[in-house]
Image (cartoon, rainbow, N blue to C red; front, side, top):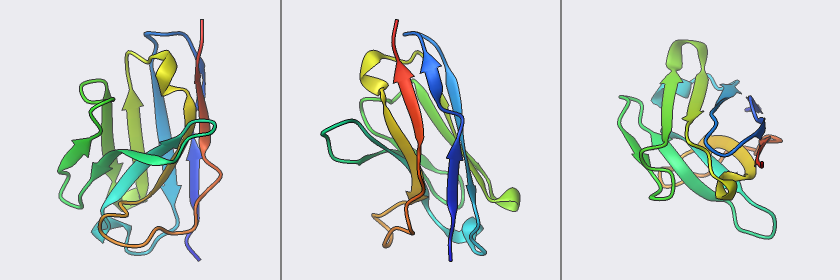
Length: 117
């Protein structure tokens, strides 16, 4: 069974940075389009950044220019570098397959990002 374990969240002031990490126990990780999602309280979960097996990336407009997704397929790791964080980035962040290319795996517990002064 695929396990996704997210880490790296925390409390940060506006303008600060965090790096999220996802470890995926997925044998064919290298061949999957992967993504980061976030869900704020009382809101739907939505995709913020995605990356193809070859490294092509795309981002939600709300994070474009501030967030960078990357992957280390050899070690089955997915990263999200978040810079210039804003209050509205506060959410629970998850990694998973890019659901535009297939059904999601079982969701992990996510990692909480809180932007507060």
